[in-house]
Amino acid sequence: SSELTQDPAVSVALGQTVRITCQGDSLRIYSANWYQQKPGQAPILVIYYENIRPSEIPARFSGSSSGDTASLTITGAQAEDEADYYCASRDSSGNHVLFGGGTKVTVL
Amino acid sequence: QITLKESGPTLVKPTQTLTLTCTFSGFSLSTSGMGVGWIRQPPGKALEWLALILWDDDKRYSPSLKSRLTITKDTSKDQVVLTLTNLDPVDTATYYCAHSPTVAGLPSTWGLGTLVTVAS
Image (tube, rainbow over all chains, first blue to last red; front, top):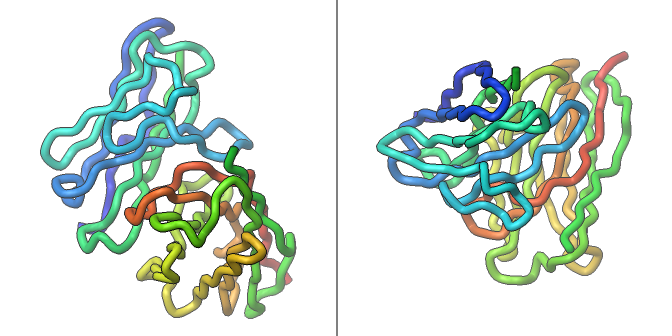
């Protein structure tokens, strides 16, 4: 398919764990990246190659994948983690990039 | 340190052509595996991938916009140029360029973006 599907919004209590999912047929073949975007700012990469965290990203961010679903988990969510999160991967042809519709994470 | 900066007009009229330039530093587009892509985001909406150019001049376009997009590179200037023809108000968006360190084309480091408004 040519789509990556994300839940529009999730909420998490401060210090608790939240999982954000991204579903698409191409994820059976290709790994996903995850991006965090705060209002008025450009996205930043938080996970690449499904589960690798850039050095500057806190260890509470982790990624995983199973079948057609990739997941981003925030363990011990902080107030500063409130943002939109987007997954991205290749489409089934491998020649184009797809973005998910984004998930708004609210930290209560 | 990799940085990218988008430049171009902030206001364009419908039916006109948009030309955006991405000026980057910290990597070379003549290095194997490197790429620069463009992504846009209409106000309040999701990210949309537009195009990618790789070090070997391989060019890839969003299937839905392919007929309107052109991406080129000037390795000597460390610049990538995107053109989008026949603009419509729905093309109003923040346009980002981003570094891609692999042939997969997924963005790594992003520019700050530039808001382009299409209106008469």
